[in-house]
Image (tube, rainbow, N blue to C red; front, side, top):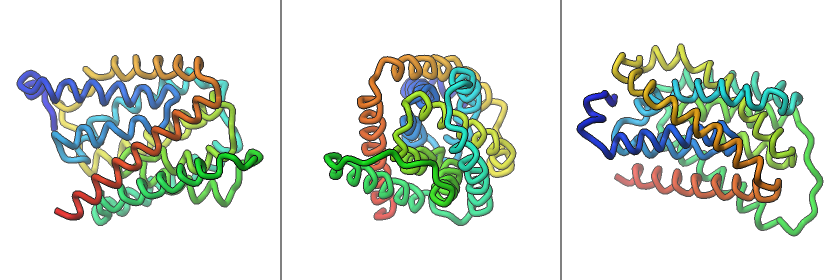
Amino acid sequence: MPTLTSLQSQPLLSAVLILAAFLVGLSKGGLPAIAMLSVPLLSLFMPPLNAAVVLLPLYLLADVAAVYLYRHEYSLPNIRILIPAGLLGSLVGWATASIVSDNAVALMIGVMGIVFCLYRWLNRDRATSAAPADLKRGIFWGILAGFTSFVAHAGGPPFQVYTLPQKLPKMVFAGTSALVFAVLNLSKVVPYHFLNPSSTESLKVSALLIPMAIVGTVVGRQLIKRLSDRWFYLVVQIALFLISVQLVLSALQSLSE
């Protein structure tokens, strides 16, 4: 776990922590999947689970800001489906945390994101109507989002695979993401404590990073307000694709070692 002393002796670690906190904020501000870069970045300096524990307080505080910013903009039908399904997925993640390989999860998430993006881009010339919120699909992707969110703070791709075809207004899309993952992140607090308790030093490090996460949330909100729906969804899909490729490459490299 990082400590205040280690931050003073490792400027690069300090810079990466600040960047990770900002990415968490950007994601909560309305650019989903961007925060998925934070755990891989910190994993260069510490075990992935330690990175997830350090970042959880930032997610929780950024969630508060995001929920306030999007308190009037969300899709209620999707909320009703995704939150219960996501909580079930988190429970599965908790129950299987000791036996599920991080690399296997990363590979699964990455392949899923790549296939989805390629499908959307290769079929972009076909006129398709917006898909409605769907109970069966929502339960499946919601459980998967909850599971991957618990094990790697990586619930963005399953969430997007389910919601992007609905062509929601960008602010509603961002608000739905903010509310769903605020609940899922809150549900991780007790399980994370039993799996890998936070130390006083790690909590101090997290506290120092909170302002940067809040700044990122506000910046993310302002960015999407200035983007057209077309460019917003293009940015989201490109981010999803790049992160998915990174996850696949990292998982394959680790599995080959």
